[in-house]
Amino acid sequence: MTIFEKIAARQIPASIVHEEDDFLAFHDIQPQAPVHVLIIPKRCIPRVAEAADTDAVLLGRMMLAGRAIAEKLGVLESGYRLVVNNGRDAGESVPHLHIHLLAGRALNWPPG
Ligand code: 5GP
Image 1 (cartoon, helix red, strand yellow):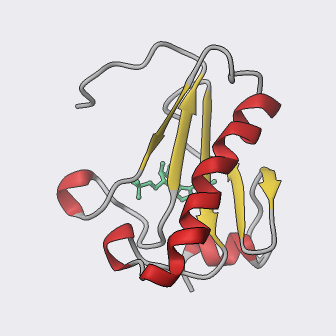
Image 2: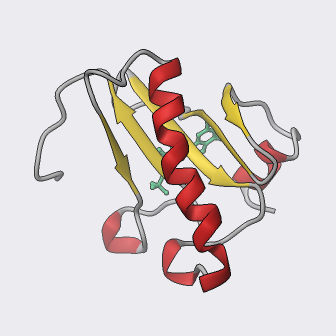
């Protein structure tokens, strides 16, 4: 099991901010911004390049949930960034697809 599957199964703790039947969102353990949430499917899809056409609705719903999460955490008006790291050069470190939601400060562009 990936560490994120264990979080989804409540085998290890996380600060959950949003949950639906097939995905959930929780605060990152090492936040890179005042708000740093990870949105993950409960079922392990290793990375976005390995998602199937049948995952399209799930991935779209995860992305759209960013709005409700941002609203709940008070950053909807100030703005938020959604990031998906796919593979080594992108900085992927957990092989379980996740969308980073970063907010709460002005974020640099382009990212490093
Ligand atoms: P990646 O580098 O794969 O795009 O992002 C993985 C993220 O998962 C990192 O931001 C890292 O801090 C976070 N992370 C790794 N292990 C844990 C954990 O056990 N709990 C939580 N909440 N976040 C984790």
